[in-house]
Structures are given as C-alpha cells and as structure tokens.
Image (cartoon, rainbow, N blue to C red):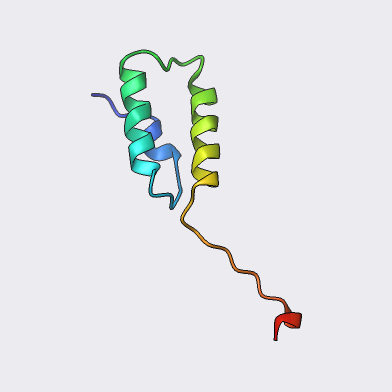
Length: 65
C-alpha cells in the first residue's frame, strides 16, 4: 500500500481521526476516491473531525469572577 496524502492531512484531536484516515485510505486504494474527488473527500473529513473533536475550549470572562 502506498503512502497516502490522508496519513498526513489531518491534524485533529478527534478520537475518530485514525479511523477516518484508514477508511479514506481504503477508499483511495479501491479507486473510489480519485485525484478528482480527493479534495472534496478531505474537506468532508476535516469538517467532520472539526465537529467531533475532543478539544474543549473554555473562555473565561472577567465578569465571571
């Protein structure tokens, strides 16, 4: 199996990152993801990972104290 762009594309703390990367690699190996639709597949995966990240952002306001 050749090295795929997917293995280095996603910088996310989502617990789903590795699984999504593996699925995208399998779809690419099966030629379902092609050079023509690869950017769209990456965008969809990145949006999913953003929405399902395990990072929690807490913003404190001076009024909270």
